Each structure stands twice: as structure tokens, then as C-alpha cells.
Image (tube, rainbow, N blue to C red; front, side):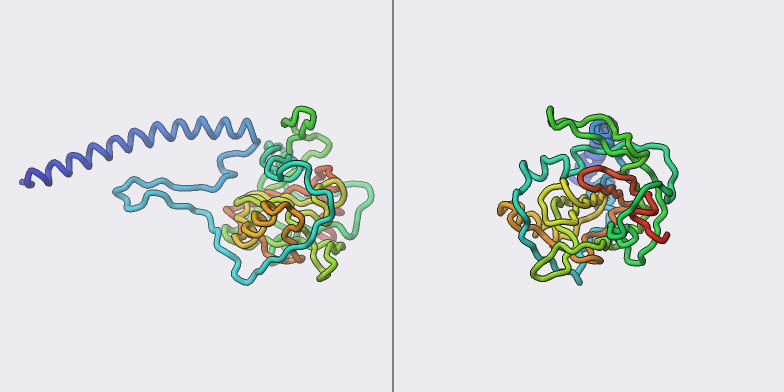
Length: 287
């Protein structure tokens, strides 16, 4: 027979576990409801967020994460003076810079490269460069980005000019995501910089193929579901807080983060307009 104090202890533990189980069940129902509201508000599915597993105390762990978000130790990051004017509102509150404000919704479309008519720019960013092995990835899902109503500063309907305006590309969790090369050079001292980081958060990055602090002219690349490299994120936060006179500048092929899970989301724009990222003649020349 257990001593009285030990018996009380085990009974208390059993009661706590029962309460924790009930609370976890209730929180799960609330989380499902919250995720449904999140999908309605942003176009993001629960699987688009970093996945976590919650363990009860008896398992020895409280929280673990499945994302691989380690630093890229071989990379160092520098800044470049931006051309005025700076963004007309905080970057995190700007729907052209922070794609989370617009969100996107899943759509049915061909999950492969497509051939579109019209001209093309041989200097356009080439998306195989997102990956170390320069591959044409498997497209896992297609999406439409929402429009933005600048009058009410609120989200509009999903864009319909193109069938797809954001594509999910299959990745290996933890693989390094890199800056796609283009035929343009935004640097002066030194030369060779490919893009400026106009916005960075823990899980998304907006890259601009000019030195302008806006998307008005030139190419803009949005990368979603990426663990932004901690050094790059810290540098962006520092320069953003200092007034954005300078922002992080990156070379073609430079690592900017790691895939959070089994896919990343990519949207690309030309002079502000979201275009179809599956277009062979534009972003996948020769594939």
C-alpha cells in the first residue's frame, strides 16, 4: 500500500491529467473553429502555418515543432541604400508588401508549367533558382491571391485575370530557399545585388528586383511558408526600425531561408500586377 502522502500525490496527478485532457479537447474544438475563421479571413489553410505537436506532461514534453528552421551558417547579409520615397505606410500594414494581408484561396488548375501567348522578357527572374539543384519542382496546389481595395484599405475578391496567381511548390523540410537570378542588377557599390528585401517576417519574404521601396515598377517575388534566415530577418527588422533608408540586399543564389514543410508558396508580379507563376515563357525559360 502506498504511503498516505504518495497516494495523495498520485491522485492529484491523475486529477490534473484528466483536467488537462478535457482542456485539450475543448481547445482542439476552439482551434478548429479559429482555423476555419482564419481560412475565411486570409485564404490560408491550417496546413499553411507552422505545424506543432502538443504533448501532455507525462510524455516529458510540452511543445515541439516539426519545422526545420536552422540558420544558414555560410551566409552573411548586407544592406543597400534604397531610392526614395520609402513605403507610404508601415510595411507590415502594406498589402503590396505583406502578402498575409491579402491572403489567397485554393483553386482548381493545371499543376504543371503552361504555355501562354504574347511576348516575354529574357531578363525576368527564373524560378528554378529558388532551389539549390535548379529544378522544376512538383506543383502541389494552386491558388488565387485576393485583390486589395485601397479606398477602404480592405481585401477585395480573388484576382481572376489569371487562373493562378500563387503556386505551392513541393519542398523537403529544411531545404535552403534561394534568390532566383534575373537579367538585372540593382547594386552600385558593390555591383551584383539582385534584389532588396522589402518585407520579412518569420514565415514570409517579399523581394524586389529594383531599389524602389514599392512594387510600382519592376518584378516582385513573394515567398510564403519559408523560415526566413534569422540573420536576414534581424537585419531587416533593424533597417525597418531605422527608417528603411537602407534595406537588406541579396545576390542571385543567396540563401534566404529554409522550407518550413513539404511546400513553399510563390507569387510573382510585374509592375504591381500578379501574374501566373506557371508560365514557361516567363519564369521557366527552356523547361
